[in-house]
Length: 207
Image 1 (cartoon, rainbow, N blue to C red):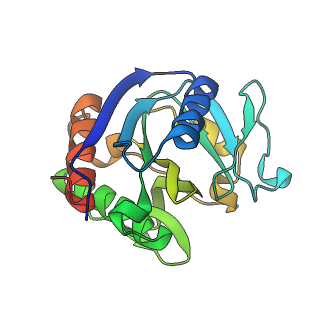
Image 2: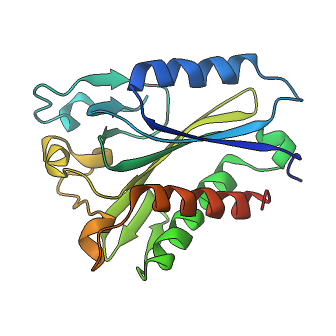
Image 3: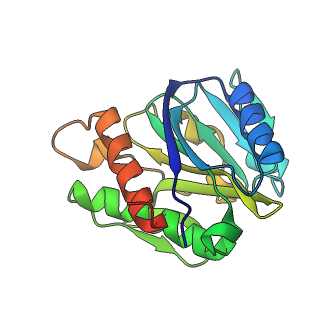
């Protein structure tokens, strides 16, 4: 059963490391009464390497910084025009397991894309959301003391070339795609963020 309150913050473009520290701090300091939060934002260019990340998947990072983080998954790229969602949720209070939360996130992304007339689906063996085999959204979570942090990244309208400098999510040759390349009219970033907020609220029982 969802708690009464969910705080959703639309943060704009924010640096990766201070945001990571703020997310860790909220997770470390929260208690049973702390409201759940979702942060929707963009980051300047950065590669993040998950806890199982293998260095060989970083092909040529060049001038883009690489940050080691505690989320699940391998290496991914964040940059302007990508919608990042961080979910700081008390899973015990929501009565959600990690696998169920992954499903909630994937289905919320499928809902958003359906609103733009795009058919997408998750893959059982490779978390994320795909359009005709190309990956449009990545997931990576960490759970500490029954609370989640980190989250998801949806490619909206961005420079896709840095993905060529890595094996995205540890898969050589995985093709990445973005919303802009799948619709006739360029998507409005803030509108996509509002759609994702609504979809997550709905799927988490906060609607």
